[in-house]
Image 1 (cartoon, rainbow, N blue to C red):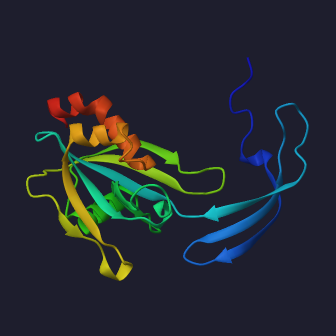
Image 2 (cartoon, rainbow, N blue to C red; image 1 turned 60 degrees about the horizontal axis):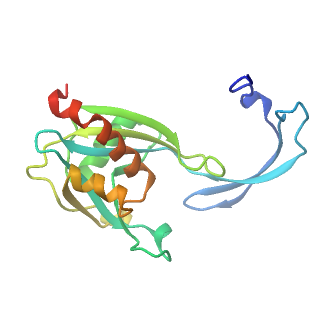
Length: 205
C-alpha cells in the first residue's frame, strides 16, 4: 500500500514568486516544481495564488430552545447565479494579527449578531479552496441564548448590512438539504450540529 503524505513543504521548490495584484487582497504568481508520485520531477509550472488571511466562523446554537442564529447578507461572489446573492451564513470574520480564533469569534459575535458565546466548541479547521487560495477557516459552534436574538447588525463603515435570524435547528438543517444554504462553512457546521445535536441538548458543558 502506498504511503500517505510522503511529501511535505520542503519538497516544493519555488523558483520565482512575484505579486501581480495588490488591493484589499493580494494575488501572487509562482513558478514552482515538486516531485511526482512516480519518482520523476514535475516540470516547472506556474500558478496564481490568492493571498487571503485566515477567518473564523461560528454557528450560534441554543441547546435549550434548539435554535440557531443565521446571518443574511449580500455576497458579491453569488451575483449572477440562479439564486439570490443574499446568503444565510454563520457569524464570521477575518483573523487580525495577534488575535486567536476564539477572540475573533467573540468579537464578530458582538459586531454581527449581538451575541456572546459560552462555551465555544471547535468543529474543525479547513482550507477553503487550496487549489488557488491560502485561506483557512477555523470553525466553531458557540452556545448562546436565542431568547432575545435577531435584528439588524454590521459595521456601517465596513459596508456591512446584516440581518440576524433565529431559525429552528430542523429548519436550518432542511435548508442545507434542499440547497437554500449553499456556503461551505454553514453546511459543515449544520451537518456537525445534526450529528452532535443530541449530545449538546443533553448537557453542553
